[in-house]
Length: 324
Image (cartoon, rainbow, N blue to C red):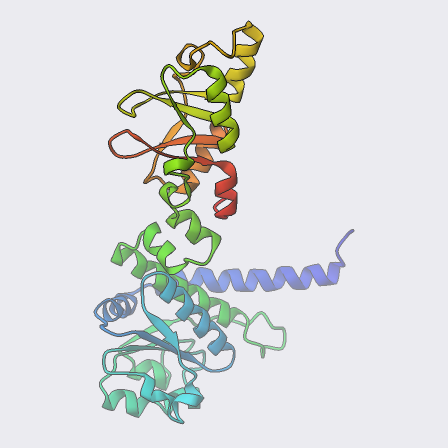
């Protein structure tokens, strides 16, 4: 299906205008940006992000991005702040106020209180000479040449520029704090990404009596009963000190039957495999999934720090844990 040329032209024009607006931000990473970062890094409380209308939607997203990347943050509605919610902002906080005009009445009405409480103020405006920008400790200049709206009314390029500036600030702070993948996972425990970064093999493996295990000298017939009762498609083989010496799998059974070996009399060590895939109990569950996929196996032996058998894990366990 081909696009209507008028629709496509409008879409392309919009993207070009917003692309240019974002590109202009490269020239705005200046001393004020450094001051903003240092104010937030020195903050003992939270970054309180505020904005009205479309800027309020951007403020909410910036607050969420900051909070999920190591900088405690929250959104406060500026109109509600004038009616009591300003009590949520403490002397330990930093305020990030977003206003394209820099003259949003709901925000400027808060300035005397913020100044009286000596709360650091960072502004993100489209007018560096506005009231908000001039009283702020640091101003992030997100001005744009034009809005993508052909009427010049709907905030479009200006909100995109503000959002990108907020992302730039969040990522600069993330790197300055040395924020890691593990830190990110702790902030996202309910999502699949968090589970992939948090869940360890030891959290989902089968251990203790659930591990299929037979000793050296066990007849193959008894080993098959152990395999069948535990349901992993294999059994481990251990010596008298419980050291793992091999495994016997469904594949080994097929090869044993093809060779004509006597199931009743053949000791397990004669037909077991000494080559097997294993993983540390402290490894990420996602790493176990990767190893299974690369090795084309569906069960892994789990070992502890002393190289002793600690458990067993199968692909189904990882699927149930929602890490794959």
